[in-house]
Image (cartoon, rainbow, N blue to C red):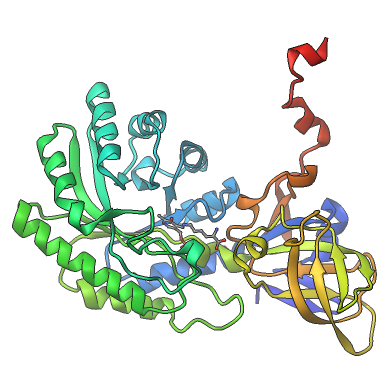
Length: 419
Ligand code: LLP
């Protein structure tokens, strides 16, 4: 077990959370190396019968140590910006294992990616394809293209993280696909390698995957028949959910079985872009109780972590399991767990049951390893919280808390104010 509560303490592998808190100060993120590896292993084993390249979605957790951990297991990276691409390269991931997604790649980013020699661009529109063609022609470099298709399938997830419906900005509608393929056929430097799809995130049901994959399978055949192009790659995106509150209705084996079933006889390379399913359960946001405040309806536990550190509850009304480490005893009561930020949405959980804690007690917000630190901000001029990685009985600060001086140093006064 990688996370265990024992004798009023919480252990990440063999390291006490109280020990890390005493050394680093709260709030902070902590990740378990063993959980990161276990999740990668589970997916790669489930996919062992297909020719799979697992490209971790860097947006889920972009810490260099996390990227290097997956990279050391053979993983590639799915990036959506030059910054993420630079991170993946810096973490030692081979450019031949990096896919570049996103609806708005700037010319400078395309140029950087082409020079780096990435595996493929997942292209989302004709004008983007034209841009890549211009840059590729100018540099005299070939660009591998996978067209991201919008299959018009509802992921049955939160609306703000669903990407595969026709009203969503992502991917190319099936009706416009021929236009892009014809453009590629006419160009000297573009190579059509495959098609991609990613219908959304935190999918808790298999059916939408199955629907989207079947559409991809049909397109694969149509592109062969109509254009005489036998695609070499199919990028099936990410999206596998994690059990924040309820168990998932499928396992990674079930997911792999759908792929086997839909694509059984195809000799192609499959690319996967998992983010949350690899990193989500590996991380915890650790805070401390500042105050317990009386409320007219329920009392509030005010912690030192806040919505700027973990935005998911405020943005998507997301549920994260919360636990409190206290020496106090007594019956459980209901509390709202909130942060210090001046917004009513700065709430980590409502009506949660705990034994009444005291200031200084540790509060753990679970399943925060994906879309936690990467989405944090300096709002209210709160310092970005440290990230800590645990492996066995060791821990290492993999992103220290910045200082106020570092922040101010990046804000030179307007010249007319500094005189
Ligand atoms: N590939 C593409 C093209 C994506 O847009 C995403 C996520 C992924 C892969 C990885 O998906 P995953 O396996 O993690 O579901 N901030 C939101 C999630 C946004 C997901 C954006 N795209 C959240 O906190 O729930």
